[in-house]
Amino acid sequence: MKREVLPVSRNAAANEAETSPVRWHLDRIVAELRVSREETHSIRRDGEPRRAPSRDALEAILNGLTEALFPRHYGQSDLDGENIDYFVGNTLSIALDSLCDQVHRGALFVGDDLQPGFRREDAVELTRSFASQLPAVRGLLISDLRAAFVGDPAARNFPEILIGYPGMIAIIHHRLAHILHRQNARLIARLTAEIAHARTGIDIHPGATIGSGFFIDHGTGVVIGETAIIGDNVRIYQAVTLGARHFPTDDEGNVIKGDARHPIVEDDVVIYAGATILGRITIGHGSTIGGNVWLTKDVPPNSVVTQATARNTPAAP
Image (cartoon, rainbow, N blue to C red; front, side, top):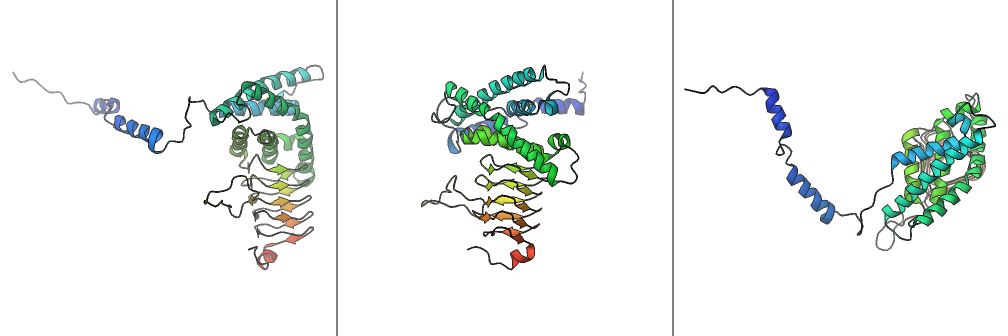
């Protein structure tokens, strides 16, 4: 008697293909990745593997620190004189405990026993130093808030700027990241800056030095490099770049790390949208840089630079 062969349904065939280990040739791919990871393209330091810092934890830390700095705007609106200090203290305690853990984890992940925070007690001391600077940071942020209110005719009140302006959010993050960068917790500082970049579209390297009363209007596409120095009461608009013109190298052709290669912007300067300022040049105090200007040479104090004047001026060698 001939047995009837039933056709296999398309769904059954698809399910079988999906569960088959041959479908993706995983054994071969995994083996090749192991060779790349361990031999041909290894970037891991020798020694015990370490956990990387947690971006999610850092985002929670930033939120907590911001709530502690501005508890009635980012924390709880119903806080009063009796309970606000308790809220700030508790919020800070949680954020700083977590920051200490992330600083320690970041130092271990880098793997250099000279890295600040490599020992647990060093991470505690670094975090304690960071915390001691928070009152001064809040004072700087209030100067930034006032600069935004004065500099933007569309701004109606401080709360609107504080919780709604991407430039204000970016500078809050930067001022916190800059402390960590100065203390050489550079991986944590850089991750903090990248969180701000993702949230606002504003890319400020944590190494950049920024004075008081700083205002970024609109902000999308702003880039400020590591060694940039910005004075007091500076205002910049969207798509401004304070970048490097070239990257100096040593005798063996390796890029020199940390070399001063970004602009110095003195006090009371305004830089309009789309301006690109490159190299270790100085923009003199009180100057105005017009929109879409490309600059690679020094600008004297109290200058007005437009596209026309920039085109007619020879570029720096």
